[in-house]
Length: 309
Image (cartoon, rainbow, N blue to C red; front, side, top):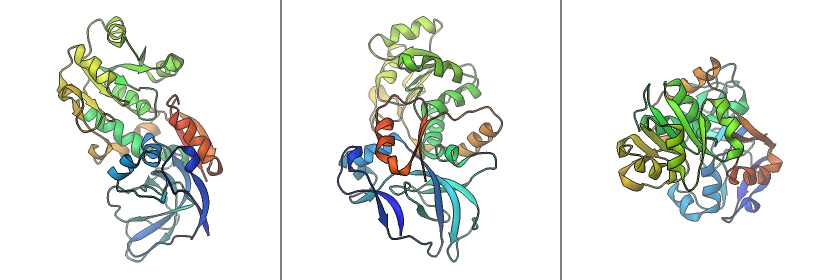
């Protein structure tokens, strides 16, 4: 037997249960990964709490939980290529990452993913990368971010925001990030000029960027996108990742699926070069999955939340 986080009804963190389940094994064309860490994302608790969100991903209850994971390959099925027993890997397994083992096809087909973990990157850090890294890269690519831009990033202190801020800085942009005031020093350390979200955002942005904003990405809802429109940013240079398929004012809706094939390699290279840091706000043992999701869902985390196994 092995362990996996399971939920049988949709709801808050209280529906998540760590259960003993039959141990999965790698079949033909598959590898099994012994999971060491699972990174949490907004979409994870969105899926487990909202039936309509789960339906968008083809998930029905009962279901496993989570997407991002990192660990070590410990079984290789016949015909599986590209991975060997003992390889350190990270990737995504939709609706089943928070478990002792995940089984993934090789090559992995969307929405699942599997990559080799570079030496020098821990399992905890690797487990934070797939969703947040892909989403941040896609959000910036959608607006054609370039050196010399002044970019407004909504939700800059969250799990996706920490990557978006640092990727934008690496691209040569000046970054303004919306966040709660308690995260301002944290954002400054990442290289962003912080502004408080909420009513009056446009005036606060004008005060810190008197020469104007040239691009924007909204990682949380629509407030930043609407503010950017009000500041005169063209819709084609504004992206959203959590506003649904029809965001306001004709701005660009995007998501991790739109990221380039080299997005995570560029991020891991930057981490190894010391140009990107991955702030892990908290790490919980799998037995504390409800506490981890409660913290993640609270929306005031500085960086990423990880579950360890």
